[in-house]
Length: 197
Image (cartoon, rainbow, N blue to C red; front, side, top):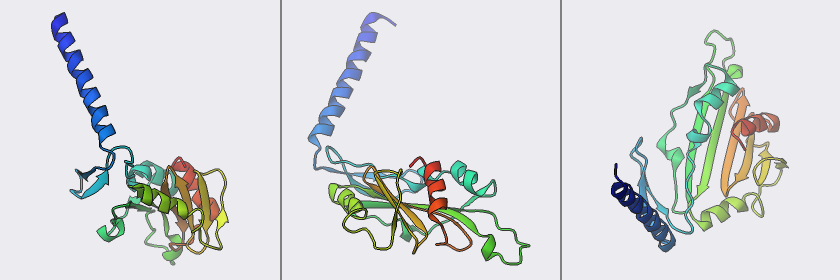
């Protein structure tokens, strides 16, 4: 390759980079439609200065994490699309794994184990503020504050769920044995730490 070709390629790279910066700076209140290539689902998101990227729950609660907590028999559950609803301000994503149940066990319910993660990602400032409110003025009564996770965290014994605020997103974490909702603060923290909270 000669010096002229290298110079032209370098100049194009610089121009593309500058264009991307200008587009990002000028797009403060614009919206863009993005599509999940896997599911085909599309949604409108803010771009520019106030843009927040939605977090997919299954990209956080991976198969490797589930197997670490539940064992090699961990299986991803199929969830109805209704559980993944979003608004213009908040994107909701859910991921669930269950341990393989011993079919010969006398009481199958007591052998049920599972982990789940529901994430409410703020797509706008209003969505992020709504998430933060759940850890402030709108925090439910009867919850136990938990230190050392995200910006704020609490355990809700009514639902057996650990709630963590991280980067403006609300993570609802369950790690249960027996029935759904039987998680403890300790089991939730084990999963939260495995998720990098």
